[in-house]
Figure: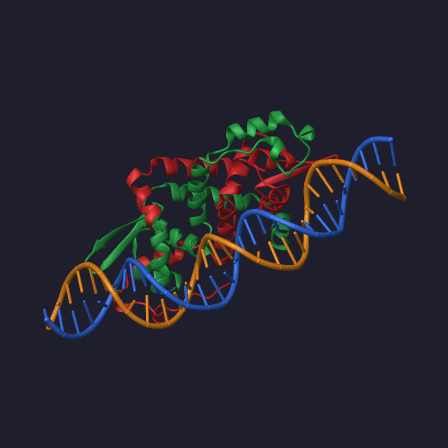
Length: 135
Length: 135
DNA sequence: CATACATATGAATATCTGTTCATATGTTCG
DNA sequence: CGAACATATGAACAGATATTCATATGTATG
């Protein structure tokens, strides 16, 4: 449990010029440190092009590690390392079948996240894409 | 546009043991390199506890930089740097009002993403949390 | 049991990322 | 204009992370 510093302790703007109502409202809405970390870990797992592609591939149906490596043009080792992360976060489920291990999305949240993400990107103006690149 | 290597070129399992249907299906579902990067950048923006907290704070209503720094107990500089990232990705919108700059969520996608993410975390079994930590 | 194959993992490395510190920009007011 | 304040930004440093290489584990099969 991390203690929230007092307003007056902050190396920030003068307390008189801050908007206390807003700050209180914000603090009430803040997730705790653990919740924030869990959320960040989840989104962080989706925050890499390779893993996005892995998950998109799995969204189309289960695949073994070998298939994933072939589909993405990656090393088996790299794929395994990433799958381990995704597995640990509960995004992906593994089922052994002989020498092979089949991977599949563990639930539909990933699909939902990818869909909302794609929608967000689609709704951006082309102008904003430039801003993004130059930033 | 990145070229997808031929199955036979890969330093991966023997082509005979891979499942061509699955690989084709996966490849058809794969986002292009740019789309994957855009998605990863979006999720990457949510992949940091600080930014999750910033966005959660803004989800409760607009705040100026000063308020954000006070609410999160962070330096104004750190907040500004993160806001720049969020702004560039279209997650957050800035409106100048005198000396102050008010920030707000740019659209509802962020709220949706945070909601789905929270739901995913809530639906995980306690056992999985352990796996996650040890992994 | 030994071999072959699919997958997992550890260590090392190069890259990326978040914060800090110093300073610049932009705005109001005297 | 110049001072005061809110915000933005650049450089630098510390910590995280993705890939590679080497090797280990697990499973079938001869």
